[in-house]
Image (cartoon, rainbow, N blue to C red; front, side, top):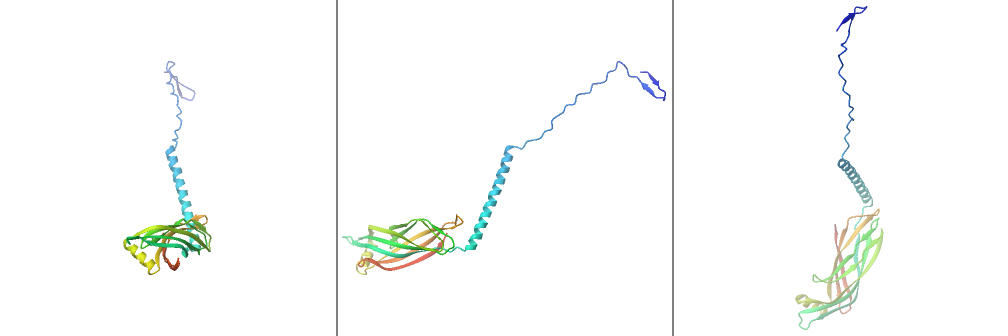
Length: 234
């Protein structure tokens, strides 16, 4: 390699004509990598949002119902046996005096009183006719809706056809019917009711009804009736 000085005293070097510069490697442009969210993670996020929304709506609904309930102060309904009409009652002792056959037909009128500011929905109910703790027959009351601050009468019928009363109970039944002119029965059952507030029904409550009735076989009529409500239970 020869070097020469220029006017300014600088030296220029001349490269070797046989020398070739190394080629510059091409630059490869790599696309940037953006990871995509998985479908399972997106689904879990949607489910979580939906669950939170439903929870919020449920809490809001409960809060509204509680405010309304506290505002109206619901009271328990009254359901009572108002009247008993006796079509017939027959007590027939068996030949061996070890049993007795009881037949009767009753029409019972119940009175439902709603003292609340909202309506009450009653479910179908059943009442048992019992003698000495033994069920003799069944009377049913269909379900119905009762408006606020109202009174309503519901009629049902109980029919018993030659029920066999055995042994000691049969002897007492025959003695009471023939000598004392009285047959004491019980009418017992539960009445289910729900309070309706803004098209929303409350949980079902039960009003237990227990009535004692005494019927005269000679007069074929009711001589005594006393009812009591055991109380309100969920």
